[in-house]
Length: 104
Image (tube, rainbow, N blue to C red; front, side):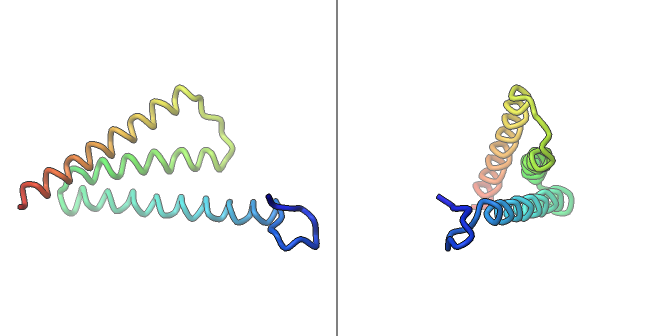
């Protein structure tokens, strides 16, 4: 467990909060990169699964940004949007599998 004592060699809660907050922001930036990559796959490579990748990670980015801004999201709405994200990535993975299967 982390200590808030000044002489402790462990991280303080404040320092850990800064580190975790930074990781959260970096994670959002990486997810945005995936959204853009999914869009490029869909538009420039004409692969339908790019839309699924883009939608899934756009939902994750939306959730993370709302969470970062301390906005309350109703649990029922969360179930629906995460179901859509899960279905979207499942569809995308299935499309990738079909593409790879036909290439062999």
